[in-house]
Amino acid sequence: MAYAYAGAAPSGPPMANPIAVVSPHFCAPYPVDLIIAKKLMTLSEGSFAVTDVNGAVMFKVKGSVFSIHDRRLLLDASGNPVISLRQKIITAHRRWQVYRGDSSDSKDLLFSVKKSSLIQFKTELDVFFAANIKEDVPDFKVKGSWLERSCTIYLGNTSNIIAQMHKKHSVESVLLGKDTFSVTVYPHVDYAFIVGLVVILYEINEDRKDDD
Image (tube, rainbow, N blue to C red; front, top):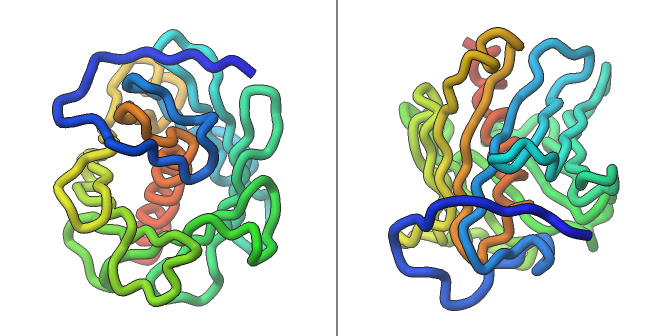
């Protein structure tokens, strides 16, 4: 299956080893620029469209309609399930768990995401691989300002950036009622994984907004 890529090279050294969380299939040897648009005028919650800079569809995110469990499904352009995102019910840190395909079986768990602390003035999420049982040190961190829609994804507790997100302003996003983000994924980094993180980032912060 062919996917289209585009983007200007970001600053910083390339990853020495590919970061293939979902699949090496989603790792490109050059930067990948994605446009992630939240569809606001829809019955189902959590519906997103993910395109490249030329408008070609790369992923779709389907939400649940009237579901007890918060569940999102990331589909490729052909409609095949790539990963399933599920929020654990009644967890203070807003933990989400991500599984391969449309599974919810523990053997298919890829990674978990949770807020770094209960009270946050800035956005900070910890990401743990399924094999990281102790969760003493996160495998990835998401930091930034959700209010400004500006966030950076780092490799563990290092300063190594693997992706960056910022708000995309356009006439279309205003007229069509879309919350739109531009995401640059660094070379050799799994962009399906990054899309999953951005969707979870959105959901965690929208949940917090509803609680205020």
